[in-house]
Image (cartoon, rainbow, N blue to C red; front, side, top):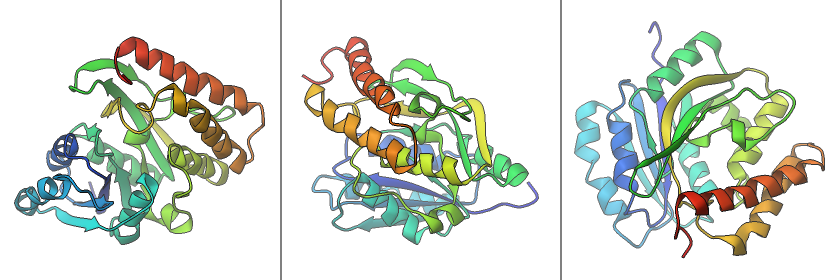
Length: 260
């Protein structure tokens, strides 16, 4: 590559000791050398910070920047914003503490960025269970007239810092602040790159998949708020019902006992 922009990878954590190793190690094995990694923690009271700190020497050996931030916050999107606010990279990716990257994702995103100067990049994911066993793949699709999370995957999303400098994640969201942000990007920018390869792994059982039916109404309303915040039709309410209730049914079928 003629130019090698610094890429900041951020993981927002809170009591993530069971899964954080896989996320961290997926950053360490990237086949791109200009990376800084930021763990943005919400004052975990388990071993999350201890585990993250144990990898410092390995990041130093690879020549990657490494920072751990820990302060009280209001949730995952506050954690993401905390990391973004100190990120030095021209390009930013976010890997949640229960997800993990494929080894070539950063290099692939950088290559696309150097070619297109994109405003938003995303690709496909593997959906895995709590043990990391493959369930199915979720391929990306380009969206022009109809916007749905069925066609977009946050664990593969890369956004230039210049976009985050204009608008951060709305911290009033608990589940769909990322989707609210992506809808805003689609509304205001045109240079969207969709890469049809599987570049990350999404572990079910995280915040948006583990509460069960008692939280579905709240989730549905929040997803709808994201649509309405960005000027989308009220008819998207049906999409919200289909996605949240349909996803819960499918998850229960694929992983019996998920919410027991």
